[in-house]
Image (cartoon, rainbow, N blue to C red):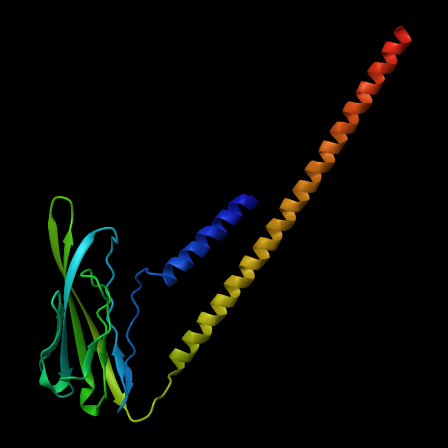
Length: 220
């Protein structure tokens, strides 16, 4: 039973390590930027099967408040980044997957945010999945509704989310510690019991051998 618990602990720790190192996790972008500051527009689309080879290109579109249609503002492909809309010239930098055509993080960084940057942003993944006998083209799109403010404000949801994250981490660490102590004590107790049984068996063997010797002497 204790071995099963230790195995579960190992698998759980491995899962959390994988989340922190290299594994893809779809996290929503922040939606509030401060005028005059920089801001990361997040856009992540994870593959359902990480082992499948893939390549992707990304396009970003922007619709300002009051406008009816999206305008193409940014493109990223195998040749690198391209700013399409002059409103964002020298103000946008790639902040997504690097050194790989298998793009899963298409985030961009917006410098010197202005109130005119408020609106809806849309990022589109054009992904080519390469299987053994065929290829499959998919398109994934995500929206970010950006609000530009004069001064940073922190919403209640953000505070609660951060607090819950730290509570979860502390709770997990406490549970892992309790389980390890429990298993250590159980293993130690089992070891001591095995030593006592071994000592008793050895004592009985010596006593039995002594009786046999005495019986042999009486017969003689």
